[in-house]
Image (cartoon, rainbow, N blue to C red; front, side, top):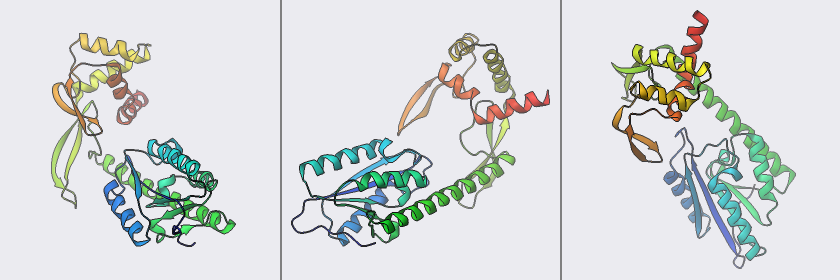
Length: 281
């Protein structure tokens, strides 16, 4: 592994890729940007083109992500217009190319077809992996496998923590239809208030009603129409400001639609609750 620096005469394209995943566990795009800019300054890599995307899962292959696709098109266009150009791709961590070792290796092999391509991974000391040699590809495989193991361990730790909280009826996300959240008076070590999930019998009776109609062959839209005719309010009710994703908000209508009926009946808490009732019967 050796650092790659641009020559005095060669055309050079330096691209940085930052991603903040859907689980929000990663550093923000801005933090990753600062890290890559500092690396470029230290290694005399000029005119950094940064591609950052948020709320994009690492489970998607690099080429299937919006910014990943843009990067590949940009590299292809640059190498076509500047034969012999040096291409540098900078990423903060190897798992930015994929969450599985096979995805990472496939992406590196695709990039390997580009002449004069160099990959810079900052959590490896900013060194460039020479993927054109058997040793370099071997190192990529090892690092990709280690990254996959790290992700698996993190997921298992999160899953175990959430299951422990659920067993204590603590709120671990949004409150599903059929339940309410009440304050326990306790706080976490970080000062976050702990809320407990309790049954909402009235809403749960309507879950059973929706479930019976669905089993009878009703569509989600037909169930929504039935609930609206009965003037059954949704979880949020009418006039409440709710998050719509990507920083946007909407005002809830209080009316049922096929989408929120489907969301209720396919919610993991609801399906487990329905399954337990069916088993008990």
